[in-house]
Length: 460
Image (tube, rainbow, N blue to C red; front, side):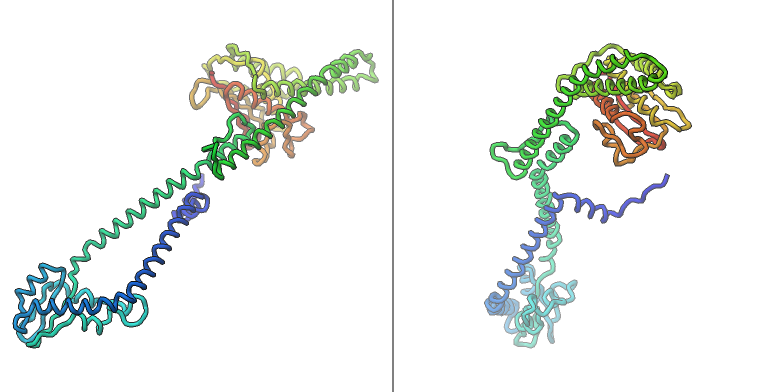
């Protein structure tokens, strides 16, 4: 078995982003927030620096003059005063001269303001980071020739990583809240999708829920519109079903009279072949009408099952024997039943119809195959309280794109399974209705070769 390599994480993330409207909306909101924050901060910083730089420079120069006077005694720097100042304020001091050479923070090689700074924060010419500006602001010379250099202590900036982490955490929290809100906002889309799938499968009993039906939003209006469309489709289907049921009832009487008149024809050698052909056609028409009536009973809202304890294996043997009387190929059907199967409360007539249609369909499409039709009856695999019936032929199969339509009424795939093999496309439809009426499931798959139809009949 060849394993498919897993897609890279970035490709999977891109696929998920492309398929998820929620993620794209959250990403748009996030990018919009970041863009607005960057634009506001950049514009505010530029506007602030243009006027504030000139206003703050004289204040800073006066403050540094006072600090230089505070650390000096009679025109000479005092190390004791310098130490007291650095302990009280987040500053660094470097004193260089003929008598005193002292650093308040030897681990800081250069003052904070002298580290590789751009010449201008906003690109408008000389900025506060220029050495010429800062020399004038933060360098002082005492009367005895000592040079005092002021700077900011790096310890002031130790909390910056914590602040960045806190900011990122808040940003992630806001993104999560935005995603949850968008998810809640778009939750009706899931209901609309599931409702559309139910309507497409012909299940109109459960409408799409509408949030705040008195004052619906755009998604609520869309759900209401789809519900109205589903009701219209249901009414059209019910009208079509009623018309078909009425026609089927009306055809029964003339069909019975035609069969009776055909049987009363004299049996001569010249008319024997035509008489038998006409009787077969009339029997096929009668069977079609019976199937139509039965499908309408099972598809209606008031279907009733006459359940009785039934041995599915014994019932399958009876159906195989009945088919063998009319079709020689049915004698080769291989029945594979698991031992110890439970006796289930089933509608024997409907389950007999299901088995007959499945086996008849498989026998007709197994023509020319070297292997016989297989009928498997085994315990229901998930819960084990029912039976699973699988009928498989070894014929040409059905194209994958047509599998989902096989159980629809009057559908016939345009392949080797053509009208020449008989039937009008009601057999599998009836089987699906019988399985659903018993609370079971119906599934069709290509068995390669052939087609496999699986029906589960639960205990209740």
